[in-house]
Image (cartoon, rainbow, N blue to C red; front, side, top):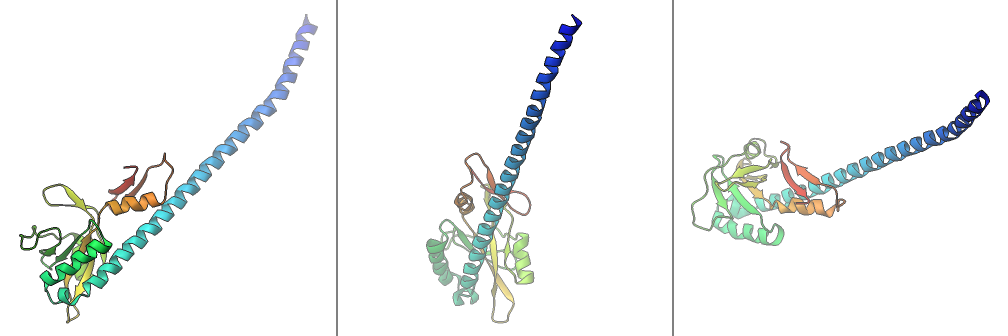
Length: 212
């Protein structure tokens, strides 16, 4: 009957007017929770990125400072590379395990390379742009990731000037740190297990990332 139909419609409308506000409230609550989760994740990502940048900057500055002290060695400034090598080898053992230290001339020739046995021929000349800039500016430089040798071996170079008595840059003292050092810095931040954290150089190449 019309009355019965009308009653059913009134009951349906009553149910709908009771349910719809609850649905709207539930959807609004879920949306707010989603926004909060996104905001929290964004803050965590930002805090992690800032922490990593701080640690990397500190580590690179500490490496530059240590190389700067080494660059002041009389044996290096006087071109006594065999004598200087023992000093460089000791610094690697004590401070930079797995690293290689090089002395590079203005023509790009390697005058010393701690990864090459004493008396053995030096690898071909190398002259990444940062090394050339150190000769030109007298300021330390950190390179992008680049390849050396025929074995597809990739390194990062930390370069500092070596001044002669005349006040000009005679050599560049360069160090190729163990790239695992960057992975260790990433792990120090203890990112969540489901996160991937990476370090990029200025060209956007991945230098290190965790998990490996």
